Length: 224
Image (tube, rainbow, N blue to C red):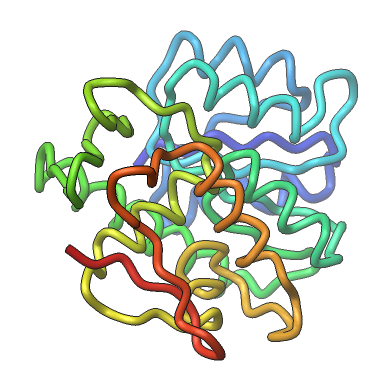
């Protein structure tokens, strides 16, 4: 497995390169966002481990660039920033998982295996079309189309709509959505799910058919 580590702290990078190398992974180190950007443009990686606070091009900007170029290599953020807002922002920009420093090395290995396994399975399954009425998602191309018109969604909006469609005709609680879309257990009082549901609703056309149904006191549902 080829891993790109984007980390400017020499002490941390040496520890991770040594530890992950001994665990059997091929490691490539970039100590700045600019170096990482150039490496990603030239080589393919199985996963990217990324710090946020980098000199010059930071982790947030780098994540935006990667996803803008339609590169869906899994991104695991390793950061000392551990507030819910920091985590939500990185996941909104397109990161797949977030591990706060300091962390247990065994947990890092577990997260790497989970993300790469999930990514490989999605490629093996090939192109999958999810449909509800006139709305279609091509999960292979990360493309959402309604009435032959492509809809531009942010990475988190795409994850949310895909999760709802994958569980069509099933009521999903806010807690389930938080766990599966954001991947982190947030305070159940947060309204981030409702906010993003409204974002998605504003981008899709529900004039002819209601697509996302609100289940009062519970959560949301997409049904035929």
